[in-house]
Length: 120
Image 1 (tube, rainbow, N blue to C red):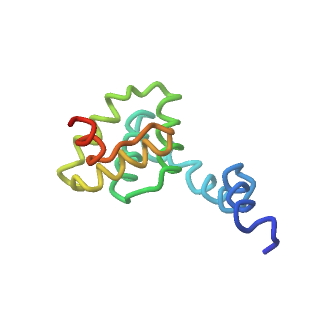
Image 2: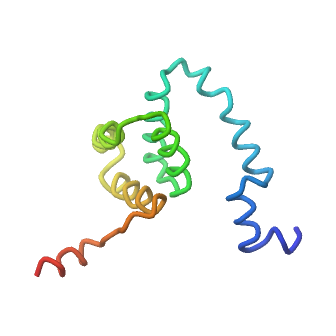
């Protein structure tokens, strides 16, 4: 592996889709939507639910919630999906997903301790 592909250079290449890993991921999912038989909104909400169950990284949420936003899926539908799956995947996974989603979109995140301090 060259020096360019290690460290932040390698991360940058992945982020810019200039890597065989990203190309492989794209190829894996190209026909998935068509083969699913689902409408686009249900397809993306299902993917988001699966990401929560897997405790996915912020980048995964960025990709899928970004696609849902472009499609016009209302935020309330995404929130409703999180509420619907919470009893199955557990509250810890949903809280982790909320944090990852916030990180993915650069939203300010507060710890419970910070909120308690601010209230006093």
